[in-house]
Image 1 (cartoon, rainbow, N blue to C red):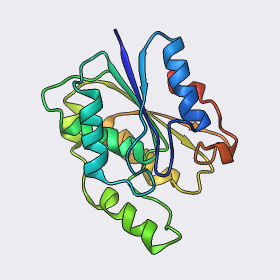
Image 2 (image 1 turned 90 degrees about the horizontal axis):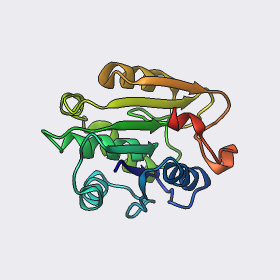
Image 3 (image 1 turned 180 degrees about the vertical axis):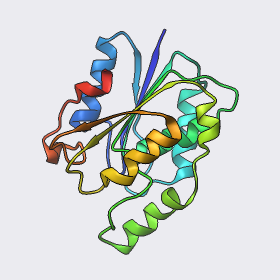
Image 4 (image 1 turned 60 degrees about the vertical axis):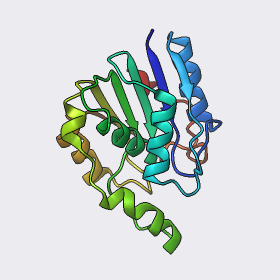
Length: 183
C-alpha cells in the first residue's frame, strides 16, 4: 500500500486547515496517510525533527510519499538524505526554502540559522529516484521565489509550480486546500 506522510512547518500543527486537508485528501486517494505533529514546533531543530521522522516513518521505499510545508520540507529532505540505499516515491515541497526573508527577531534568526547554514546532501537524495515537485507562491513574504525556486530545480530536478496570491500557504493567507499538491 502507498504511504503518505504530511509534515507541517515551523510553529505549525497537524490541525492547520491546509495540512489537515492534505491528510484527508491523501486518505481519499487511497494512501495510508500519517499527518505528523512535529516536536517543539515553535523551536524546530534539525536533530529533533529528523529523528522524529525516522521514528515514525521507519522505512522508505518507492511506495513512500511525502508532502511538506516550509521548514517541514527541509526536515523531509534531511531525513531522506540519511536513508542511503533506499528508494522514495513522490515528494511534494510546499514553500521550501534554503533562504528566507530577514526574520523579525533575533530568536527567529537563531532558529533559522542551522537550517540555512547546514547543507543538505542532495546527491544522496537524488540517488533515491523519486518524483520531486515544489509549489511556491508569487507573494510569499517569508520565502522569496528566487533563489528558492532555482535550488529545487537545480538540486532535485523538481517540477515547480508557482501559485498566484497564496502567500505562505497558511490559513491567514486564505489557504485551506491545495489541489496542486496532488497533480
